[in-house]
Length: 331
Image (cartoon, rainbow, N blue to C red; front, side, top):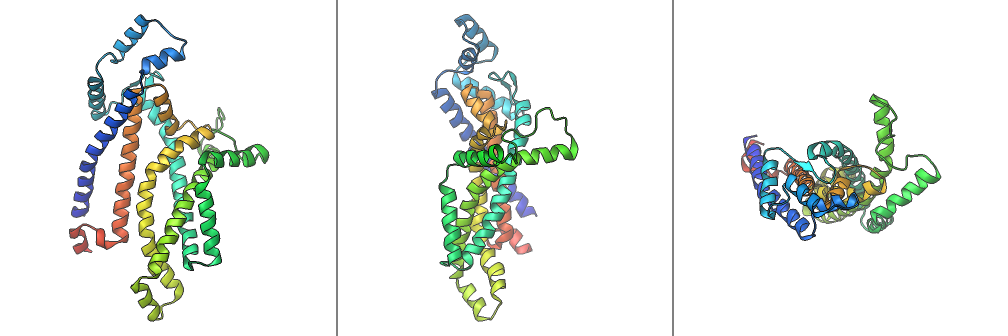
């Protein structure tokens, strides 16, 4: 446990420079885009004179140099203060607390379903490489992987929400429904069916192809041939030897896809009208709001770092060769 704790602490410390580089890069890109939050705000209310613009910039600290503003925002982030959103005229912390749960529910559900179904179908496809079932599943995965996410979401919405009227067309829950407890949970789950299904189908294809390819490689390994020679049952070889080793690259991909899933939620939330974390990031960019955008990027980076850390720990449980040395000796 001491070795694992040291590993976790070292990874967390090592992620600090990464977070700083990401925040600096995003801030620089926002500055290079031209204009600021006051320009975007005045444009949204129909304009204003130079005196009003100067007054608003002074109130929000936007009259300082870019470096001073960046260091000011970093200082407040270090203290746990996410600042004030000029574009939405609300505390950034309350905006994130309001929007993040919807995106986490969407991402968590889609990740769980795509990983489970993708790995399961990948095992079926990789059970006999080159078979008819393998070609069918691999071809279907390639087709799904080529379909744009927004188009797939629109098609599912038209079919199941507009035509068949089985599911809600947009939103995270029924507005002003007054539902609480289990009834509200069911209502939210119903609204999440279409967006979760869209993300699941998109990333299921990737997990399936990686699992199938990994299994095809493992089948040719010497330890599998040795297991066959010892007369071990084929089902046991498939699950205990081939699939268990083939799932390792899938676990690595799971950590890498956490960032892609978070970015993909922007499109899906826009298609299904979900006021989530992804749309909040888009609103921050549109409003040239540095405090809101840096807070969104900071929270997103922390989530990605946390997901990758959990994946590294899970990888160590599945493959003893990559565990810390002290932990291997204990095992």
